[in-house]
Image (cartoon, rainbow, N blue to C red; front, side, top):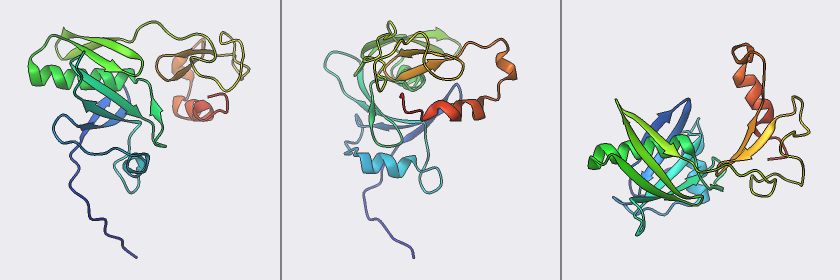
Length: 185
């Protein structure tokens, strides 16, 4: 059975940065409603476009743009560093600006053109207490009760850092998948 969905065309960009991929909807150009259902449909790598995060660019009164980030399940994330860099590069190429201030739910992030197509974003200081990261319950964020005793930090979304003797010896796709949906996060 085939179902046809009648809806206006949704224009988007597909961006890649450091192994992450993003769908970007620029609402400065066309104002489309972005709902959790739409995010979930686009996120489906088999029937949709697929992404690690979806980002929406909006106008901002106090910054060059306002960025909103969504996870594949439709929930919001306060920030995403790689997507912010990709979007900053896109806006810099559009405008010729050498630096930008981008408002996110984490605050205003400063992006700088480093030359040769490289862009850096100051994500601000890490969040270190369990509630700000956020984790599911109170605990020592310097040694999580997970095999390998990783450190937890928040950068607008939770990060888990493992210290290993040989990073190249770790099968990252399998290793990361074991912890990506851990109940602590």
